[in-house]
Amino acid sequence: MLRAIVSDIHGNLEALEAVLADVRRASAGALVSLGDFVGYGASPNECIARLRPHIEAAVAGNHDLAACGKLKLGYFNPDAAAAARWTDAALTPENRAWLADLPFRARWAGALLVHASPAEPAEWNYVLSPADAALELEAFEEPLCFIGHSHYPGTFGAEGRRIRYTRDHEVRLEPGHRYLVNVSSVGQPRDGDPRAGYLLWDDEAGWLRHVRLEYDVAGAMRRIHEAGLPRFLAERLQWGE
Ligand code: ZN
Image 1 (spheres, rainbow, N blue to C red):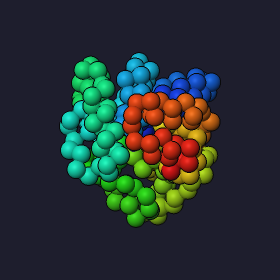
Image 2 (image 1 turned 180 degrees about the horizontal axis):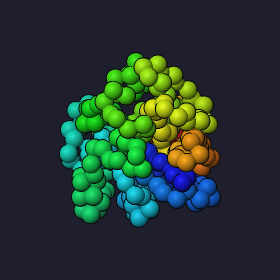
Image 3 (image 1 turned 120 degrees about the horizontal axis):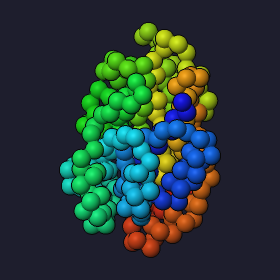
Image 4 (image 1 turned 60 degrees about the horizontal axis):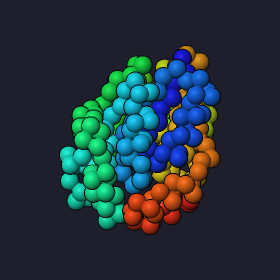
């Protein structure tokens, strides 16, 4: 079955609409989210309302928990903290309760879903190098784990203890290998490519595709300005950084 995985939407409705339209075009039969539904962007409730009816599973991101008061803002930079406070005030009680109830891990289609780190799901570590990935791969049994959090798409593939990293968009899954897949951010890419991203996974044919899509960046920026959120949160969308 063709499956779609989204992550780090960050309240960016324009980016989410582009991704959901592509998921429909691809005829993906199932959709899940790796968290950070909210934070940074100006459409937190709209993004939850749009996504929630379509997802089979979801895990909590640090920005989701920060926005509903379950995570201290101490280690957030000033713009992220300001956005978390804005989001906290904007969320409906129902959406806040839903975010607060999201689990740290979920199993789906034989794979593991975690927002940041499979080894320490509540610690929000970044997995950026094969050395990071080696520790994480020892912490779970499943053949695949999908993570978000860094907003930096790529795939770590392990054959025994040997780990290879690739930023290829198309990845063939080799039988007997294990994978830790960093899924692109829908709403705030940080790899220098401003296009919205998500992942397609065909678990029968054995491939992954890191998909990138043009979307209405100007519209998302305008909403951030109108909401009175920090200007940098709008500007970074056009750079993808
Ligand atoms: Zn994020």
